[in-house]
Image (cartoon, rainbow, N blue to C red):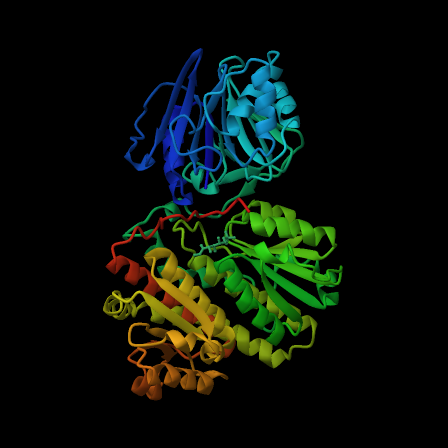
Length: 595
Ligand code: F6R
């Protein structure tokens, strides 16, 4: 979705803006633009298409600039609708939606304003022009008072030189502090090549950036992003998705680092809400897409290890439901970006009902981390591929630790906790073993790459993994795939099984193993092909399944971490065999900031 970048300082701004836009490409966009100020001279470029073809050599002189990558919402994909939007020499880049833009446009048109685009954003430039009496921040403040909706904006004008005015409401904005100036961005990946020191703007705050300093209405903490700058490069890999899958064992390591005790866990973000968590009698786990499937694994973990009732919900659904909410409940929001609008709307509902809100989030300083009362970072580093992979592994690891924490508050036996923690320390090594089979998995993916329909089945902890495997396959290869529980197969989906519809069955040696074997038999009896994900050493499965991908033996509650990895690789190699645009699948955006 849309990305904002701006720079003011001692360096030439143009290359910084172009590089920043390139770093945000992964979010998905259809057009882009840049505006550079050099005294009274204004350079404005807006284009439809890919920024990757743009050279980051200095395209024009100037030390103040704003840029934008647009994912069209109001107004089609065209140069005139790309940002920066301009009126009367006021230049605006905007993320979000102005809900009352039609009324405002009508009012301004009656006053004689002529509009040159179909966007809602242009209204902001017109309002600023109306209010301008010589000071850009005052005019911007007044203009924003007229607006209903959400926005992250950056504004510049040669009429009030030497500054960028930045504001936000329900759309993320961070300021990066560098030795030579300031960068404003909607996404940390756009700044980490220049600085790791950031300040995050809160809703309704306005910042004024100048070459030698910045002001915000109140003092703000400078945070450090612990992402490596090479994390936003592909390195030796052909695609970000493959790089990120290969990082999955490292993600587990980083999520548990410094957080495991002998028979408990130490999670800084749960210290304050500790006493309320003790009283919690129900946990809601809320996410969307892959975040929802991690939540679903979390549901089983909370019940079995956390010893507390739990329900996983999609953010887009629970907010419209009449669930009985009360202060003795906790809602855990699970999100890579921390900006998913469906989750954030639901977070508002939970807070209104005084439910304790926690976040399991990857992006530091994101709205979810600031709006929740506590939480735990997944520490995955930037995830660039649109399809989420390593973030899923980080989310499950963190949810497992939260479950352990809750369990120890509720009488989970010390011995059981120790056993899980000991295995958790080993699991990343086992993950490396799984990924070392990549070439084998590639062969299997190629073998099945001409099929157009797939079922993924699993039970208990691996039911959400079946859904995750199916989602990954469909979103990057565009073939139809459905994830169901093994138990549901004979209640309907079995009607679709034949020699043209293979099934991927997740059946490690666990408490539902025998039931899964029966499900595989049901598929085989209908001439369906079966690819099994099974525990190393399981000979029986080899006799029934057509192909087997082995994972090392582990505790049942930890199997999802290992079984998800080959499914991520399977989806990747399948899409590779079909020649798809893996990192940027059609119609999808990385961060879904509209409901
Ligand atoms: C799937 C995928 C999406 C996201 C979903 C939530 O591969 O990437 O389903 O998981 O849009 O995004 P976050 O985690 O940012 O809330």
